[in-house]
Length: 202
Image (cartoon, rainbow, N blue to C red; front, side, top):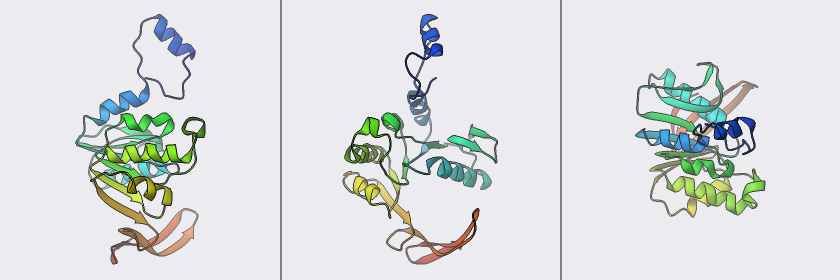
């Protein structure tokens, strides 16, 4: 299994081909895995997807939900990049690079933001937004950053009938933060609000 970032002339791929060892690009392997779960949460966005995938995985683990997960970074809680749980929940970092996330099958699509990245492939911001739009239409539920205009535009034009949930820093969103207090570089307190009502302090 190899990443889409690996070139075709990579010595290991060349040797695998010479020895007739089957190879599979990572997004196809990951896509096959996502179809084995009834609750696949695909977390994407130009910025923050590794962090949010890790945080989501930790929240599920610490609440006893026992998910499976694939994360683009090492989660200190587990000291690894992924886990195999015993439930039907699969949390997966979903990267837009060369449209690899379109090989996945998310039940819930989380879109953090859309910004110019991988322009050597997408060429224009409109094509990038179109890719995220396609990703959103694959899910039954879409959770998006309602403060990010590119994300809102992509989903607004999706024609999807999926349930839409927004989050952000302003009360135009379903979920938003109030009473934000930055205590230090690694400590921020806020009140989590839902449609005008406080849910809890975080």
